[in-house]
Length: 165
Figure 1 (cartoon, rainbow, N blue to C red):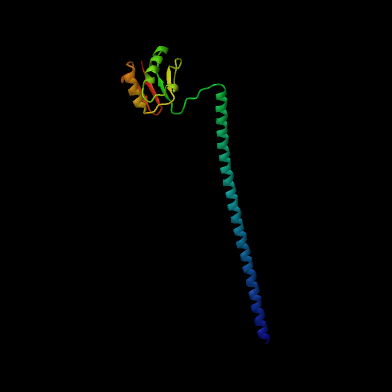
Figure 2: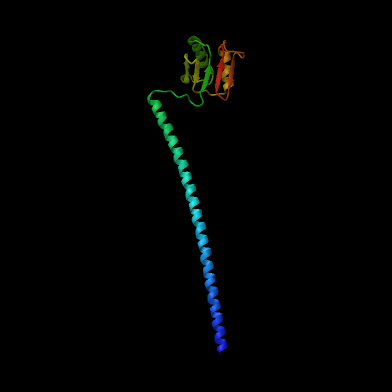
């Protein structure tokens, strides 16, 4: 009977120690999991903060551009439309620019309201044109005898036509 009691006590003690060790291992694993979760949350918060900073910077830039546009509009500064065609005529006087403007008004696809010249800059600006740049140059050659293949060329990247008179 003593032996049975001793054996039972030993088994009980062994199970208690094993259970304590298991609990200790579980606590260590839980602590490690908590650390990983905390690190993940920190990374997520940092990336969210970074994204918010980028968004705030983009909004600030947009607001600054809008403010600059409003200020320039107050002073009557004209903006060239993004798809405007600029015709450069180096060495041209006011009379030549007027002749070219008159010829341009006769070209198909040209909106006469969006046509303006600057004799100081020696340029003609065409705000709206329905067609291709080379087609405009071809039509202008037909309407204005001073414009030929030899003295005019079109630049698609700049959206310009240069006429050397």
